[in-house]
Length: 378
Image (cartoon, rainbow, N blue to C red; front, side):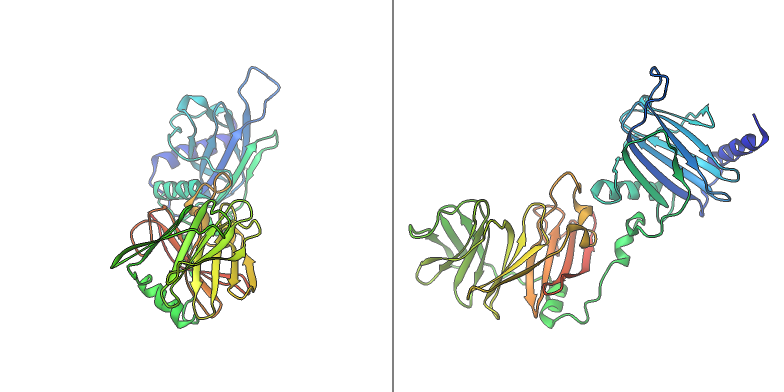
């Protein structure tokens, strides 16, 4: 064994035995499958080269099983700890400069492949608590490794989500928002005691005096997959939307029971609905993978809207397994002067300001500008 190697291994052992270093770096590599070496009887491998001279590095290795991690480091780099997690402790092994390392296996860490999504937030929370740090310093994810070493040679300062409490830095200003929007932010919206249930047979409106039923009439298209509805006490009108196929925006006059079609949705699937009485228009949010597909339907036939990608809503991807499932639909809660308040609940039964995960955004429809105004994590 050469002298530099002895020094590096000594640094590694001392790092494991000593106290947590406040300035040490935590670097994460997630790989589903290693590459097959020339020896086809050997396990697939992942080669890692750590080049952080003068730095103490904690290395976190995540894999899908049956992987041999071969770790090396440049001169002057101190590997203070190696942690490996996967399906089972015996499924993979780790060697440092060819020497097998024991005691590095820990169970239960999620294995995300990109620095977004619920699993990634869980990983960041777990690692920053374990290593007593405010952030992880780099993340690399891949499904298939090749023979080229995975290099750990820099600190990622551009990916905001590597920090544990990154959302506190993403909060936007609210002082310049319309008064009605600011009031809603503070109060969470008033409960008027009215409830609307929209189903394939019609609409039910429940209030302090009881429930009234408005059956669908035969002169409107069949109601398929009703998704959202809203009641406007001022005009005494109920509005409801459906998705699937063409989709329709319906209205019901509570005074007469008369039904009408306000608009054909033109195959746009909407998940949320809000009525703006001042401008006599309805604001909808997209369903499934397009929650930021915001549309505005005027009662006079006007249409407008904007599309904001899911990743442009700070913290929204924290609430679901981004890339593998649909996120929570955005619920429109208030509208004023071109700004709409959108709520993203972490669970279907949660609602601001009750307990549970949520995100509250302000969106300016004309420009697509998004601001994170409030949030809560579990």
